[in-house]
Length: 60
Image (cartoon, rainbow, N blue to C red; front, top):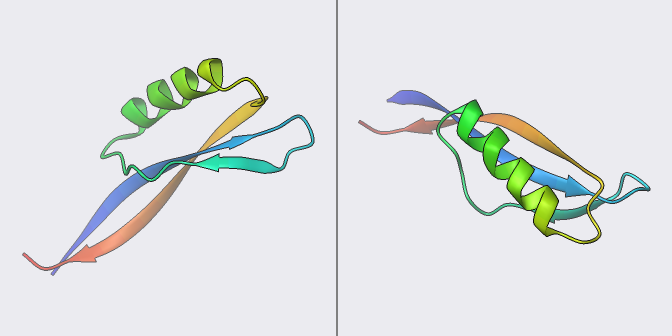
């Protein structure tokens, strides 16, 4: 078994309520950060975004 690190993106409105959570998983932080910025610019109600790190155990 191997522990893998992944990232996901959540967009928030001006009241800091989550309005979108990505279904995609990103392998590195820089990629997730770039995609989060693009999603933020393209979503009319989004005010900020966060990148969350999580771990998954995978069979090798």
